[in-house]
Length: 453
Image (cartoon, rainbow, N blue to C red; front, side):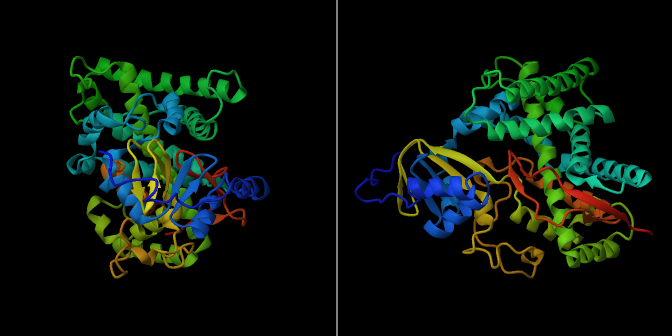
């Protein structure tokens, strides 16, 4: 409902750069296309910044996040201009829906992420990770693109979890570049109509058909085999009905949801772990602390669900990685009615960028915000600032798989870190690429050093 007290005479416009300042930033320092831009703006103008040339707002404060994502969440929906491009790849799925259709799709998939179901996933995660480690050890590569091999692993795990399917290495090699390109395409080509026959559009549609063909084959195979004893995402989608409860979902509707969970579920994990090992290579004292903990708790064996609470440093390292390089680095919202945030008027239908990356590096909430310091998240650390750590967003639209993502990252880390250390091949700083997930640009080249027992 509209707040009647809101008036253009009572609430000032949020501060922000002039057109000339923005022009200088964009064309002189090239900061508009990277993640330093909102950090610079928040330092100069505060936690609510108005970009007049784009008629949009950048938010980087905990109170503003809480207002939009929780307190007044009913007034804010996903900004359709921003999410429209995602529909070309993910269809009309949970990722891009809003309102009642979004609630229906979330409720449909929620049982997959309940704890009693998640417990069945953990042995699959540890078994597959152990097998991948053994395979890499047999090959003894002198150099690897860590993001790429983690994408293979996490995608393979996702197939097992969501449809109990073991796909071939060739299928993984086909899907990985298709997903990586589509991720970048959906994030960087906002102003090109998808039907214009540019090279990028043609390549995207070709990759998209590859992915859809592979996943539709799996869907059709499941229809022929029937429902498995252990429920998974695909079986729930087969049983689900449309929002009107007039029919079951079509294969295209199932494809949209299956594709969304599969791709977003594996890619966020792979990106987080790639960033983590890059940070550990730069901070060997934490790599050593990780190895000491794993020696004390596991002593060379595979971890189980029961071990997760004892792996405190492991979890803290992952959380600190998510603070510095959150996989979900921003979310976009638009307000249905006028509002006031931090004392500033927000006209209806404004575009708001809730910049999680900037929030996680806001010095108002974090001491030495750019420093890698996992101790922030240990039990004896000060209480975390309210609404200042949101790696999976917050409020009603919190990432549905957040608990699975953390547990999976802990288990994978605990297995790999007992077998191998990674050293950076290149000493230069890795550039963050803000796609759907926050990716290391070009991946991360690492030199594996196998730990002898």
